[in-house]
Length: 300
Ligand SMILES: Nc1ncnc2c1ncn2[C@@H]1O[C@H](COP(=O)(O)OP(=O)(O)OP(=O)(O)O)[C@@H](O)[C@H]1O
Image (tube, rainbow, N blue to C red):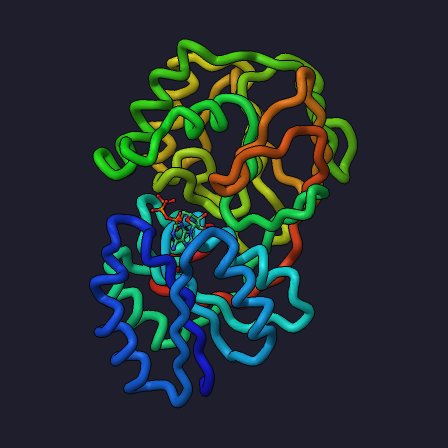
């Protein structure tokens, strides 16, 4: 490993990575010949930096929260020849870094990065031109995250997501959902939420897809027909037991590609980014990125 580019969002989290930047840079320089550090100043900066350096680096380290990782993954995934990609977690949830078994302590995660154990992982891709590592969702999941302000996140951290989820259960706005996969029609009916998982963590927990694999070329699909406490409870239990939740109200499946339409059109939450609407087609790009891992649990 000769050339490393650390791209850091100094505004992520509570600025915890910025406080450690000197230590992080020194440690990298002890092990790597050519270390370049780039601090973003606004959204879009990190992606522009990736385009600028292109393949002129062996490793890109995305230092920040899920928003920073999402922006950089979108830039790196679009490259023909992609450098190894690592995450230095510095946000509230840090979902994909958890799925990769990386420590949530930045300096411990840095040691794991320097150990350079890697794994090829799938990346989700939408017909709207967006790549994603963690999840794509509509319905309740979008409502939950729309209701969380950045002050809530600063104050309550991951708890903000739980409070918002409980609040939104009572206000779920059902819609008509039609889903087809490469195997044919999967669902046509009333739904409160659909989540397509690439990684196993969403909002810092493994409640939706406890047995997900990162390299099987398939998404995990979850359709919640009605938002009920019973469904929420079975997901909570599955988070603890790591078994699939069982409920007539929930439909689980796997697919390599999926086509989704909703009426009325639904606002999408894709790895925490909002603003796009259904209809959409999603494809799991098998083994699209090589990523640095920490302690990975054995495959289910
Ligand atoms: N210097 C900057 N100032 C403000 N925003 C920035 C800057 N650099 C990048 N951004 C944008 O900030 C957004 C949020 O970043 P990120 O998600 O990493 O932090 P966070 O919101 O604190 O973490 P989390 O999402 O895990 O709570 C990203 O979409 C990113 O594009």
